[in-house]
Length: 310
Ligand code: BDR
Ligand code: CA
Image 1 (cartoon, rainbow, N blue to C red):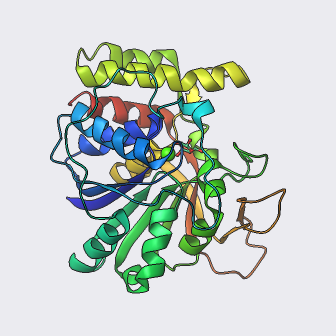
Image 2: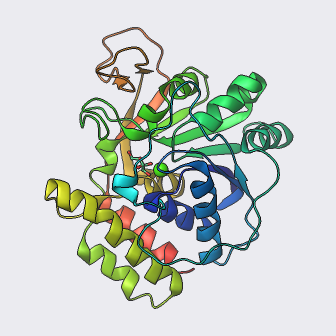
């Protein structure tokens, strides 16, 4: 199985991503590291534990990481995810313990102790933990197989400002460090995730599972899509983070291009913008495989098939 660390700020869409990974035998989750993002850290680490217990996997190791971005004040997204970050289902307070080790130490130790090129980092939130690991132990960079991240928006624009996507906007300095690290990067931007909409028909598949996890997914998805439907009148809301995990399982669902990606950290208007040289108009090095399209039916099939096994 492919060894992964999931770095996350759950979040309903993070929750579905974690469930997809837990349900997939091709993946071995070395640990889940929580970061502040959608909601503050005490909630994101608690939410990660709630999800693992829901999936019947309380043996999963969960670590708490950074409570604040590298240099800025935390911006959260309760307006999208609700007060708890995981509004929708009524999940019990978790009893499984949080690991005592700091998430950043766990990432460094795992990458250094496992075979070089064997660990994939799946980043579903602001990139603070991963940037801290790279800053503290630069020797991990050549040993990381790949970083697959949800973040950025190119042709789509931004979702937290006109220019910036939330995960990159919350900690642009961290994103800059990650994109300059030399680690192979795969990006799932809004351009992809805005094509993966959770419509009512797609939610029905979870209702008919007749499992506790299926019922919780209905509540998570119904809460999550409300925001976009109310705000934009769209049919469904974009299910961002599970695309990262789906890519590891079925890369053929996605298409994109190797490009240079840079992060804006100075401008007030475009802070956190991802600047992608899609047309190769600069000689800046290509540092990321940026996805642009997804087979959305294939994606939702994969998600429901796997989560149905939990
Ligand atoms: C990203 O921001 C969060 O609100 C979601 O969980 C996702 O990771 C989308 O911009
Ligand atoms: Ca997230």
